[in-house]
Length: 203
Image 1 (cartoon, rainbow, N blue to C red):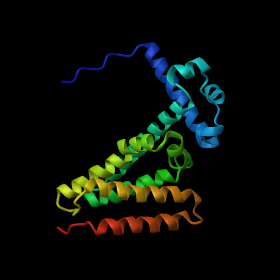
Image 2: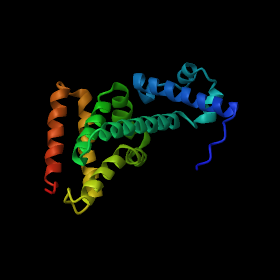
Image 3: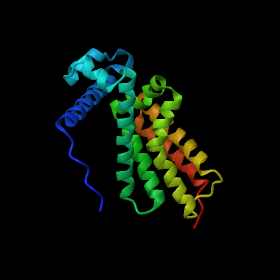
Image 4: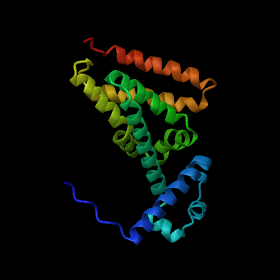
């Protein structure tokens, strides 16, 4: 039997509540104004904390932005898992997961923070690290499962996963600017499905 975690002290609970308030305020500010225009003072005021409390939790505005992106990618991955869980077949889980991810991409805060700004603010290596820890990790795991079950014919499943991921992310990047987002999304998903179909092993 797993031992229960010791109860947290009031100080620890207050610290966690302060950090969460900063994350919430930062997310709102970054979504509304973008990284450059979002001010640390305004974020601190919105979170109802002092500037000293801000620096206790985050080194600077970029560190807060990083934490916001991590939280949002974790949320996106959770949504993908929930959507996929409702499907019995792995191929159907894959389609449901892609659909859930694109749903997230169409939400204004996710589109601006994660899709439009995160890579430029955090740099390619850190952005990729976060992405591969959450949404991309699920895609890789799904394609590996298909390969394991003999339903996918690919010499390098991880490379295929990253290339499919790049296609999906490109759809997400284009969605906020599309004249007809439904049409773009539908056509984009057809292209992704057509590429995947070329690797599908009939069983």
